[in-house]
Length: 116
Length: 116
Image (cartoon, rainbow over all chains, first blue to last red; front, side, top):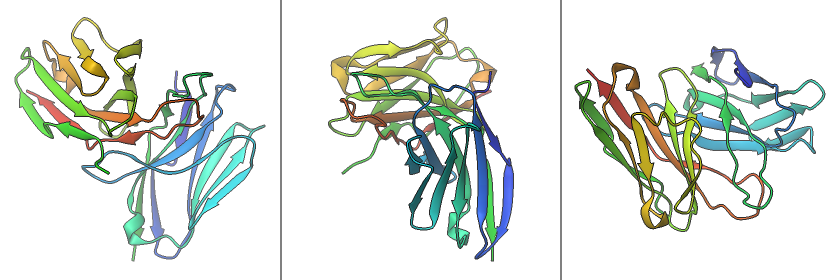
């Protein structure tokens, strides 16, 4: 059972354009939604994250939009640059009381190519 | 601050041979994770440690996979015997742990295993 569905699988955007990647989740217990960026040969790195008490979070050119009722969240990359070319993973988890650590469930990833 | 260190970075073995991967987490991080990442897929959790205790190993194929985290610092993941389907990238991640929610996981570069 795939608990986090990500689309599209690949995306080509012109430099300066907006990249949009969508994710949908099934488990209503999830309460933490990070996005990770992965370059070839590297491990994933946290890009931005959101909790369901807000509908939007912005950090620089990166914005997460969150729709709790639809169980969907998306990543928007404004003014996309060739250096943004990477694979992006959405993820979701629920917090554990007490210990604080959590288990991430990842989407299958979106390969973004930003062309000059 | 040094990141998560993994070795080796690449490993090629014949099927039925044993193989071991090593991970050194970020200093002070109590929680350590091993993930499996197949080509074109998101990471999937294999096992999670809180200090030296394995608190979630439900996804670890225990007939051939084993892991240990002696003294709650470094960790080793072993496969014996390896099968062709084990070819993948094995990622290690660590997080600070504690009582804060949404604890960020920091990933190492991974070990790419090829089983011939």
